[in-house]
Image (cartoon, rainbow, N blue to C red; front, side, top):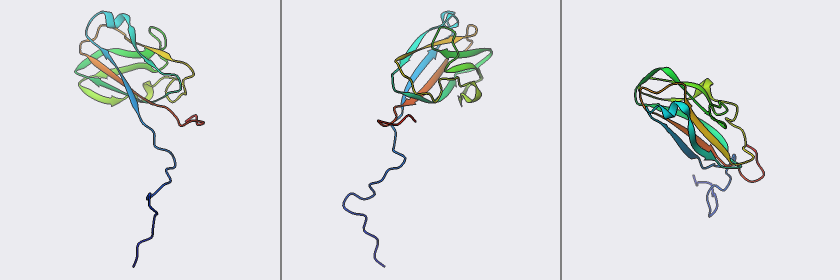
Length: 135
């Protein structure tokens, strides 16, 4: 039985469209300065934060991590725990900017609730919707 002909370009419909993910990483170390907070990175205008992961090198039993648009803000990550060596999704600790189209370049500050016992990386993945789309 002959196979159907797809045409010279093969399958030409991509719905929903494929999106390219970008990522920024905030590195929080065991220095006291990271408990004060710092500018970690800037998310670009027109992007949408799509996922947040936390990578911890060991136990930080009493400390939590915040990422926000101000020093100590929680708009992107709110009181995320990092207890033990782990790689995990932010889950319910994701803040209100998660999944929101950013209308301006947005500075993101990182802050630990207290000096960390072990280093933590927070990985924020984001994408740009296709022109004319908001998702």
